[in-house]
Image (cartoon, rainbow, N blue to C red; front, side, top):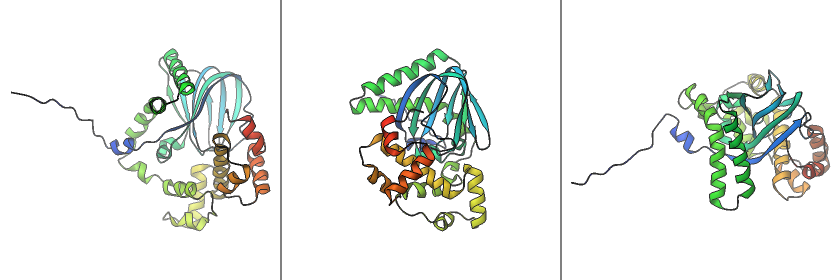
Length: 279
């Protein structure tokens, strides 16, 4: 008599959410004795998440409502779209990885700074080194999948912790998830605050106040930060002209775009593209 043995993947409250989880690498690197972050203008928010693995020394991340010291012993996850500034404590050696994820932005826990203890520092450093080598040598679809899986391995412990603490479907219902998605979809167009407000059940005054408490800046400034973050991404990842990038980010006037971009980053779009992005 034949017997069939099969296995079924576990099913949890978050199984569907995890199945749709996205992650796109922006860049990865190692900073040695870093004391200045010249490419990051104080209190700007980028559209990508940052992972930091400190090896030696320390620096501080100052958010609107808190300050976090990044030093050896913990793996740090910096939220996307959240304004902050760097402050050096001592010269820092650290690995960093930047990645995009729309899904993670909908989880309340990932809208603030997260850190987890590193039990085996050598193993953690080896993981970053391995991922760095994989990215540099990636040439095939299989290589790209390995890189994507490596990112998931880094963020899995953060997910494990976050998803256990919030109820089913909370991610899909997280505060301003629909508002943020609308802003991202319409960066090339005029964004009316009344349209954003209509996506919630709040009064106009309550919407503006709650938005500012949640993200540290008013809705209009957040939209500007998102447009500049999108421009930075396009400058670094594409060969589009500055004029084309300005238009894709909602700036019909190229010279106005130049002025706003320099206001938020400290450099012109052309200089930013030349320097690259290595925060």
